[in-house]
Image 1 (cartoon, one colour):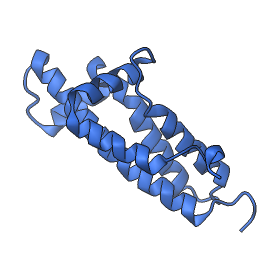
Image 2 (cartoon, one colour):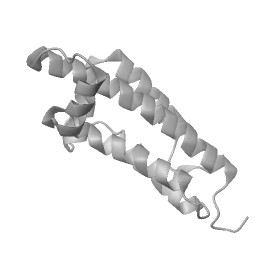
Image 3 (cartoon, one colour):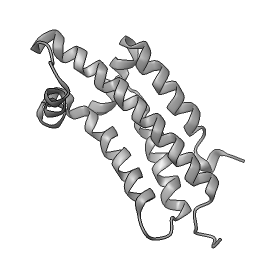
Length: 140
């Protein structure tokens, strides 16, 4: 293994984090669907929900998380050799993304609100944070 080649441990960790991010995304999507239904009426099927996710402003904040999962998929599916630095950068990006904040960007604020209101989101968030652990530079 060259010094830049990704370790099996990091590859597996990224795959595990990816699955946890998907579960978090599902919980956030369900939370947002419920919020939407309180004001906009019932979402009757998955096609309607998909259309809302893609085109309705109420769901736009979730795109950052969707895009991160797509980035992870693309790097894991790439034909070229996986580089440790690229995988670590994605893990760091995930770690930053799941930092809720009352005063942050739209994702961080909406994420903060969802954590205050949904036990399912809290559980999924806790799993992601646990799997991400400390930043690579903080691990001894």
